[in-house]
Length: 447
Image 1: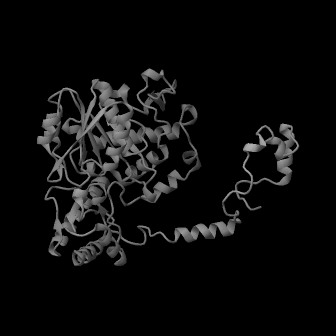
Image 2: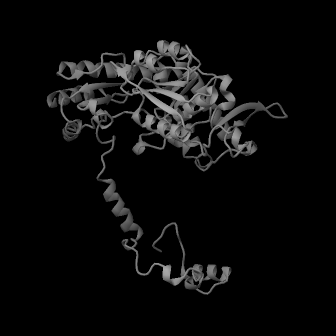
């Protein structure tokens, strides 16, 4: 047998043909005219036996270098964080990794409770009233928030800061095009949203203002001022936020945000080539019936015992199409479970300590880089990312850093020509003092 998961002997084939009432494969396709059938062999290599196939793909895998081999300073939306070992143990249980939508609560209490816990912890972090049972990832959650705002306010213009992740802005633009909405991007000043530019374009047709906190450049946006400006009219205030940072920073809910979204990747979800992730979506009670996806609620059964059920489902599969708020299908329940287990294992004090270490280690690296002659672009309060000026192609610098044993930062010139020669550096709690010192020395020598 050459195929591990596709066993089919000649006997199997004969039995299947007999069952459907044909004599041969040729007869099976006899309804297709011969003149339009493909003749000859496909231009693909011959199938390999399993040991040869494994060896081939292992060779391809060996060409990659992972964050387990070299210290990484690459963030920009995907971060290397401490993941308690219990996370893999729990999500590897078959009742979780094979579970689908928990339509039948009587047999899905474990998954429903896990989702409920996820919702609860997201609410505690964001300072919001309720959260749904996850989205695909942060960018799609942000787009859904903007669509909700447009539907709720009956307005057509979305104002989004250029300090929001460029990939999230691209997803937003795609969604807005389908809904015939107008997206206006607001320039930045000193690494944060330019309030004066925002005031200039803010108008009666503004559905929402979208910002990121900490923003794409790692800086902390002035949420109080942004909220006041946003709510000066009838627009909604949407904040995309790294959930780990909220273990230390004042949450957007306390600034008056209407919707808080983000990616739960920093909690228990490995970098794994950029996905899959788990988006979160938190909002106020006023918007509860407008939330995309699903909400799990807590109740009691006829015996008075605590139980969990799918309370609200806003997808068109479950309710009338014209009443649906989203077409989101499979949520990221397994990754939401990973985030829940990680947050539970780390605990409230642990999350705060993790966030604190991110701030302190990033600040330490800033000081070290300055001592080695590297310019910090924005002198703004940051969480765990900041921008440096290298004055040469970032790709070349990263190639040299790689030879020195480091995975360098993100090339901001990829997204904007004006940012050529600028590198976004991420520092998390897993980086050691020795790694930070050595990285600062090597980068200083290169620029």
